[in-house]
Length: 256
Image (cartoon, rainbow, N blue to C red; front, side, top):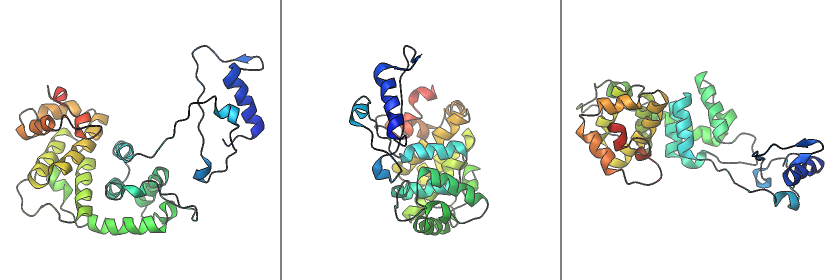
């Protein structure tokens, strides 16, 4: 849709006749096109009705679960994933009046800015940056995540489950994003089972499974968790939950 009408006319010939001049589209090839909509405030041209009618139209929406998986596998700042789990509305929030606003693209840029100790307002805007900074203050007061994953926090009253919802999201996602090995992932799971409700365990298991699969550690997790009855019980109990979560990532078959 950023192509001018004359260029779109050429595309219409390619789609209708599968040829342009002497060039013919090979058998079995499909034509795909991507573009922004007018409501996205992009510089676009109206697609002619005959051309539009020759396409199947699919709208792509931002998806938090997919973005959390991307964060886990790309090594983005873990605080971003934790914050967006707490404030999912800020994954993509177009502000036509300001040049900087939250989107999956700008959150990745924000991660780079955080890596060099710069404000993320230039990437996601002042409002989102202000909320994120307040969240980071809570994040800094969390129990020591490394101690939990190393096993030092098991059974320790000093590493308790926080009362503040934002801190719960931060701690759960922090554990998932720092669990690089199967044994540490199992320790994080065991700690959460003892401290938190099943919805938090499910959130953790979902993210840690993506991370371990990317590192080739999911099979190792099945081995180290083979004798952990609480882990097997959790997978069994949630095997019927729909759509997303740990069940789509870790199943009974993985444990065999």
